Amino acid sequence: MINTTSERRKKAKEIMSKNGLTLKEWARRHGVSVNLVNAVINNKTSCSINKGHKVAVLLRLKKGGIIE
Image (cartoon, rainbow, N blue to C red; front, side, top):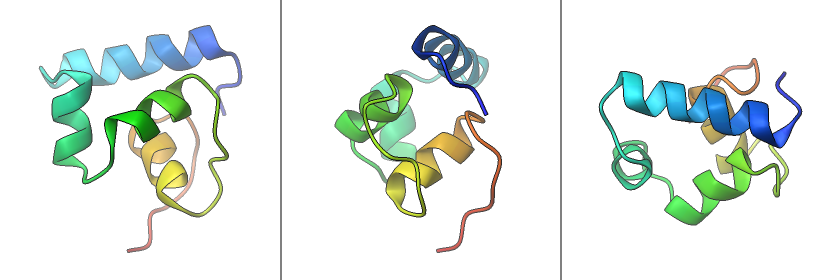
């Protein structure tokens, strides 16, 4: 799991740029709010089993599965 905020930002930026997406486009594509994505990237929310967990897993900030 990536713990520091700077590492989280770097990893998220890599994932989004690799896919040619802005943060807003990425959030919309994955059905989550931009505010939630920012909170996860900036380590301001819990990434337990909820939408925060989904965002963290999709951005490869933590290991785990997604159950919908």
